[in-house]
Length: 273
Ligand SMILES: C[S@@+](CC[C@H](N)C(=O)[O-])C[C@H]1O[C@@H](n2cnc3c(N)ncnc32)[C@H](O)[C@@H]1O
Image (cartoon, rainbow, N blue to C red; front, side, top):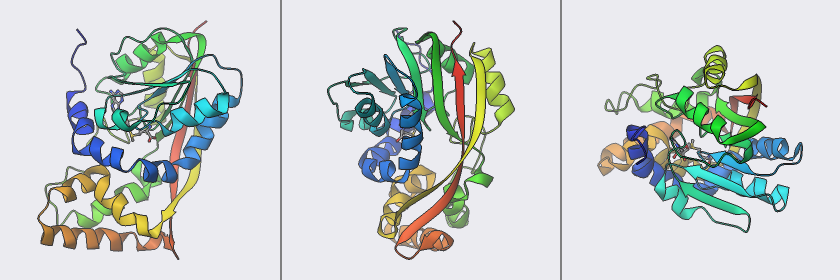
């Protein structure tokens, strides 16, 4: 039987969090398209035999890589049933709902990618060791993870603005599993070494993301801790909090577009030969 780990994250990504992401798949893929392009380019850099996309969500990146590589088989894995349920299969794309930290993968992947899907493990060393075991000798890891919230102000803008109205929100960065868990480069490097990866590299990636301004309310109400909290609020409190959150985004609004800078790491490593 699969050991039970990551139970808090599993509950969140199978509850309101996962349903919010599933319902927002087109918006998420639009906003995060620049990162999809980076991972597709990495996948195309050399011939590949089998690709694994970890924390694939609704599978936009998995499908984009599969389309770019022709008939190379690609597997997306995610702990979130609501997202895997709506992930569209194509000829060479499969999806599985599983916890990547403990799932018994076949050791067949020569490329493992992820777009912001590897920061949510209870035990990152165990998870990345499990991913290394899924990799063929010399196979590559190529994932993007967020740097700190100071490089990604859009991610915490709503929360900081509504905190006085919503004291029930958890602190912005409480440590542990979450979007900023791999923000500290020395810790990430050490974690990957401990997990048995070699040739580890971390490169800064600064990209601008955007969305149409009329999508902003959906972004604020469907994703992240503020989105989840807003979904459960009575109407008058919700309207006030949403209004405050929208106002806080003013500096990112340019005409009919919302644009914001982002800061990520591209983390690369190889499995020993
Ligand atoms: C920020 S979302 C990114 C989703 C997708 N990669 C994308 O770019 O749209 C993080 C994803 O990691 C998944 N996740 C979290 N913990 C996981 C675990 N232990 N095993 C597999 N997936 C996990 C979540 O369910 C979620 O879909």
